[in-house]
Length: 82
Image (cartoon, rainbow, N blue to C red; front, side):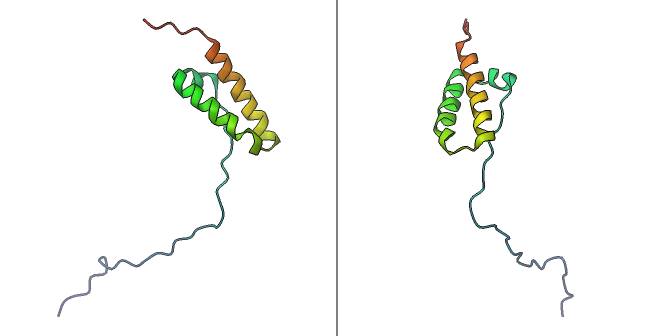
């Protein structure tokens, strides 16, 4: 006869999921965050923001426009590469 092992028993846990899609909020990028990105990453972020513009509400739309303004400002900086 073997003693009962209480730690070895694993019980299945129920996964709790919520139906529907998760809504992704627009985030505001600071100038220092954008300055750390490469030009390629800036162009990709700009393209992504431009494709999302029609589906944004008023608050997120204002934030997206501010992000685009900052991205364009940084892209206008001359970058000297040795």
